[in-house]
Length: 196
Image (cartoon, rainbow, N blue to C red):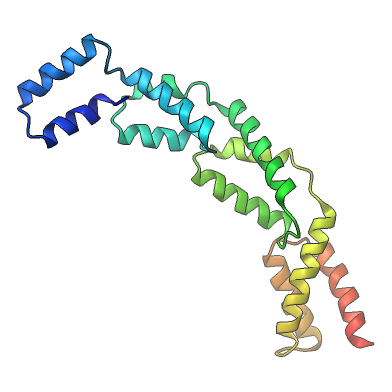
């Protein structure tokens, strides 16, 4: 299937006269060989079945193919917020099952997923709703904090000591998205180990 714009562009590329292009388009439409609405619906179905892609990305691709706004709206109507939340929830479940030894805070992971899914064409509202349904895994969060904290400690202990070391570690871990209460707990256990 091709859109009207794609056929026009192809014929212009072949140096056909404008009047011949118009006659060809009219003829193809009469025989229902060009139907932008049917193309847009098939395109959206195909894309959503094959890969993780949201309606905003599909809309962008349809615009590039010259599909008009009415046909685009009709084609994208099944892919509203509810559908997006369902798809994103399933995808997030799959990502969680794959994740082993995660090295980032829950907040950092949430930001990473948000950016990733926005780039794939999903709406912010749907992404936030799907992420809100997630249970924060406290064990993974603690393991990530310990990993990041120990890594930073090895680097910072060469440059700083005492209160300045504690302050720099706390600051760096906070920037990575960890909660202050957990950072304090980590620092308390690490600093006690350093003193003995």
